[in-house]
Image (cartoon, rainbow, N blue to C red; front, top):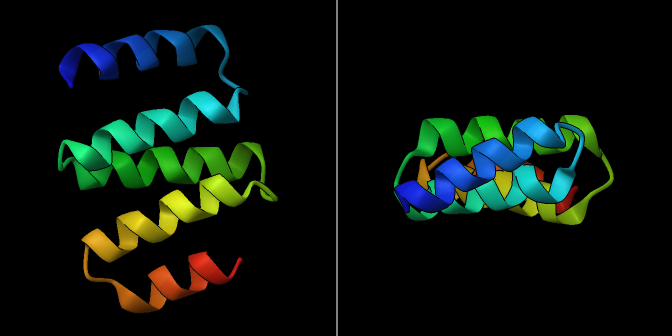
Length: 78
C-alpha cells in the first residue's frame, strides 16, 4: 500500500485538480486504515468536484469506518 500511496501522491502533485487521483488515493488510504488521511483525500476530491458521486461515496465510506453514522448518511445522500 505504501508504494501505491506514494505513486498517487506523486500523480496528485502533477495533476492537483484530478478528482480521480484524489479519490483513488483516499481509497488506498482507507484500505490501509489511515482514516485521517483518507478523510482529507475525500474532502480534497469534494473540493475539486462537488458533484462527483464517487467523491461523496468515499466520504461516506470513511465516515462509516470512523463510526460517524450521521456524516456517513449525509455523504451518501449527496
